[in-house]
Image (cartoon, rainbow over all chains, first blue to last red; front, side):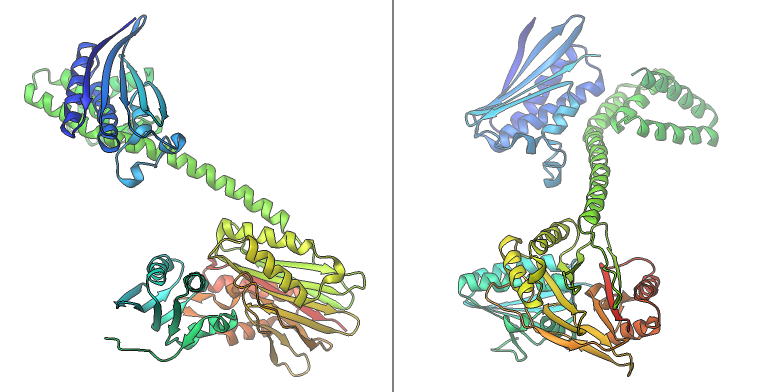
Length: 133
Length: 109
Length: 336
């Protein structure tokens, strides 16, 4: 059982803040504690910044997921950008941090409980889930 | 000890004046600078007057520069080598294939 | 997770005790707590949260602004937490890598192993020690059916794993030469082509190749940009340089190597070495060639293996047991 809670279009840098805010709102509503809220917000930042830096435009969507008795938040970041050529390279530790670009996708994977990445020349889709404790 | 690289660039000529030591730690910066200069300039001259020590990593850098200069049809030469530095070129037979001169050509300030 | 909860309880108690007593012993326990947390991979943001939650119980009325400031701090610490976790992963990878290099170094040793020929006419000793785990120096012996001995000593410019790969290639190229082909000039000519074709830009090899004719005690040799070698004359006690002109292997395919020969008399000592021996640096000062020869002279009365062991021990100690470069010293002593 799931449903879309909200979604944010990412086009400019300040849209990143908007996405964080929307994500924080839904994670509060779903009952996440303050550390998890901060983790979710950081993950959203990373995903939104990737869209802002490397593509024209993209969207971040928040969904509620249930796996009884657990409740979770699913974040989907989707763009129609050029895609990622070497997926295993971007998922390697030290790939983005060494360039000072931040935690990168491995960071998102760490912050969340579930992580999935699909990418081809038509765009990239990242799906991440965090379960409320 | 460090390596200090001074460059004097003109239209077609590039001169690098080095001072210090060329070893595994300093060679990468020399390589980067030298190769891009050999790529661009018709004539490249490296002045080693103030190089007190060079190890085999330095040789590697100059061999790469030599190869690139041949590919490009550019001129590449070394000037003012200290005796112990020249010894290395002599042992390795590189003095036969690299243009080595003891006098500085042209106006350098 | 349960351990975090019990630690959490522990932290709360420590904090409230400390706020009452300001006891140093409790600060010591806090230190222990942080060490345990590191062991359990607990990230800094989590610790801040533990502190925040503990504080809420200990000081229930700390006020909205303090509470918000903790949210602010947690937010700030998240990136540190990620960096910390990444650091842990990279550290584990480094350990893994190091052990792989250790295995590779062992393999290299096995791969490059060469047997020192035993011969009733000459006594041969060799000592080769890498500065790091992988050896960029190489030596190789071959004995033909007439009992003559081919000796190679080589140094790859460049160190570590790439140099080791290059060495293995040279070893296999040398093994493809048949026993009757071992004349120094021909060996270097064909190795030069092999290295030029297969080695990456920026990597070069120096090699000295000698052929000891045990019938008439002539030593034939060629050099590809290698450090000069020496012969110590038994009757005069003088060193003579044995060196041939020749370019490093792999720089140019158009060169041919010259071959020279030297007459070896009874008791003479041939000394082949790499620049790890002559370029050893002590307190910023280089060991002069004469000094190296002096040391060799001091040990020259020993048998061949005794000489190389003695010289190595001397230089190892001189460099505070930390070699800066791979060290290879090889000596051949005519017995009768």
